[in-house]
Amino acid sequence: MGKSLEQIREILGKGTSIIQPLPTPLERVGEGLDSRVAREIVERAFSHGFHVFARSTTGAAPVAPEGTSRSLIALASDLGRGRDGLVFAGVPQRGTEETIQYIDGFLGQTREVDVAVLPPPPHFFLTPEQVLYHVKEVHDKTTMPIALYEFERLFGTSYVLGILSEALGLDRIIGMKSSNPREYTSKALHIAHMRQKFLWVGSETDALYFSQQGCDGFVPSGANVVPLLFKRLQLLPADDNQEMQSLNLPIWNAIQSLYPGSRYREGIIYAMHVLFGADKKLPRPLEYGLTPVQEKTISEYLSHAIGDGILGKGFEERVTAELKRFS
Image 1: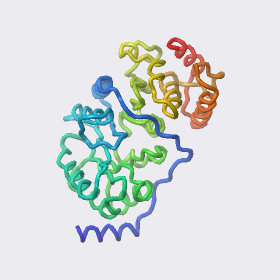
Image 2: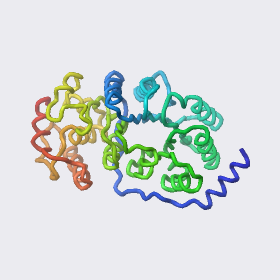
Image 3: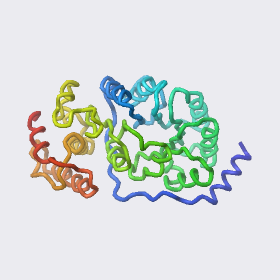
Image 4: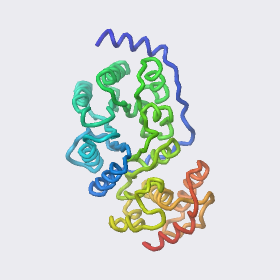
């Protein structure tokens, strides 16, 4: 490994940033996905020719027997065999040797997935040079795009993407950063050929950002709020709830099932945004049985979303009517 590490150290001194992070990050939301509904939606997305991006929000290994996010990764792996466009992600919560074994093991699975994922460990068990060495090794051994998970823990997303794409000449890199989805970049998406039909399975905030960068839709990972897809996916009816009803996940029940705190309030916001769209104005005072503090928080988040141009038409009337149906 020595000679390659020396080369990488030299490159590190010459790397330049090509990525500029966007302002005003939104908080990451929720995790957990009903595997039955996830499988149905992922299968439907595949049948429509979508590329499917799935990632674990719990730091799970690629295939693990327990846990909702782990189950999602496992079923996505199963569904993705022989198909195009599956990204596989997870962060090993282990030490240096186990992390290297994890990465080496992933190289043996590349025929089952379409994007290799190289995650750095969460507590700096590997040096930056060691991580970059393995990135280069994966790149040289495969022809797939490579996803770099939470690299800001080592370098900062902008810095490492600039280094890898310019100095190392790695042209198939996706940058993934869960703590600040707005530091995902259109450059990284373009490199990974993700401007084709693309479905995100994961954080709602990430999906909202991706929607501005060419993503066609997403399945949120907030508890049981699964069938909320961007309208242009055309996987759900544009103006009614029939298919969601058939999945036995009416929107109000789904919202109420969210965890308390930030996941609860943000789950409501994203459910309203994605399912119904919104006018670029705040709705009347919310009458959904929320506390004044929750109403104030939701209004603040809505203000951010409106300022970011996320919201569409018909928000106030449709959301009010729909939520009252299930309240």
